[in-house]
Image (cartoon, rainbow, N blue to C red; front, side):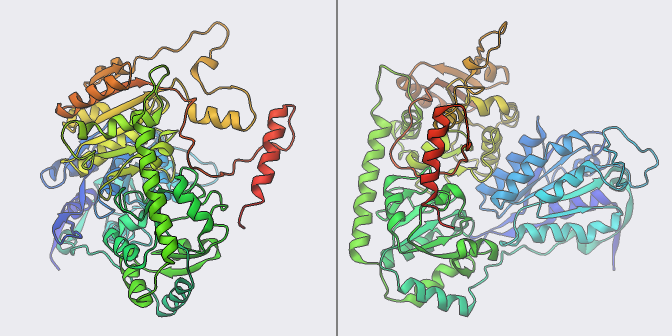
Length: 622
């Protein structure tokens, strides 16, 4: 066996740089698109040297915030339908723990990212070192143990030879469609620099090809029997449709069998927005058309979805339906005590369609679906284009201006745009109102609903899809939480269009607070000024300009349309700020979402809210 004398991190980096993946279109691409790094004493000397030596084969990107760079890496993978990844590395201590939130986000959303935090010395000679966590009961514990519950695979490399098994195992977890998620290899700083005889074949890894497991024969037989019994079936398209790149199979199944389709947040863009059988968003943030049929469906075919509470109306929405879950992971397929069909979404749909042969939904059901879908599309146009002039705009009117700005410039209603968002009111409005024509052009992080993901996520999407316009829509609250990667996008020459909707506080939670019977408290900025304090005045445009972006504050939707035209024509990152109101939202659609209300309170409003809560819970499916 031929070997090469390398440090552990040199071997790690060279293996990553050599990895290639066969894409869905048959092309061969590097599996790792690069490494985001903020160096510190725990990774600069070891991993930093290895990254510099391989900089021509594996690019390193410098960021401004550890959590943000991990968000960018996660968004990169999501935009690539999980076929490619990025890695992130930090020093020990706060750099490492700043990654924990992002790891949890990736875990919830089933998205791969390779986390490479530095760690303390295995030799322990200099302990305790700077930033080291000391546990009085566990001598081998470090800050990186916080990654254990929020990663799919965790390992601490305590000898250089361990990388030979640990790294391939981490790659295997990320490339398995059932286990896909974040992995963490904690890298003690002394082990990073230690040399060993590395087999040359480790530096020449095999081509990655993704597994597409078919359905078990018994499970398929049960699924076919259930589906054949349905007269009013409904498909819920989840994120797994996109990750399996099963949109063609979904469309063929829906059209062949006359089954209407609704989309979760993760699954939106599985069908074009104007497909006759696409009823749009489902659930708490769903369209009236989708939710009306969800209440009456007799069988729900849930494809690649976790059946999260926002999708199911906290288990109240599909109250009459039997559930058939087609999912690559058995745990997700077994949710709601439904019928499981464990398989790849694309393969499983093909098997199902062939097995049910000429079965179709009741023609009256299909016709009703197409009629209501058309009515909802017309209503979306009305909601997003009829802009009053005597009040502040709300999210729907801003969405319409942004969405249609490409059409105004001679394009196709934003069909090439990728919209990015994560938290607040915007996910509800975008889920209902954004028009996604192509798979993956709706990029919503709503599994963890992490404020601060938006701008960093937009950067990751732009790295993955440099030829498309990436539009980040973000509220002022999320902007304040994490905005530093504006500077990174400028530094890297990766243009973003960032639209900041300023409603002066946490407007989404303010409305939930009011609906729960509580008074105005600690959400809107003007309600949070203590005696002797001052009203908050934040100039977001000036702030963005300070980081190198072109930025403007527009006074209304008409000015926003003009500014969007200029932003599209520009080559650098653009930030457009508009004042909005949180008091108006799109009332159409939606359904119950369980938020527990106090059983006793001195406020009559809270007691009334609790009474409504008890009534709503009676419709909940257990």
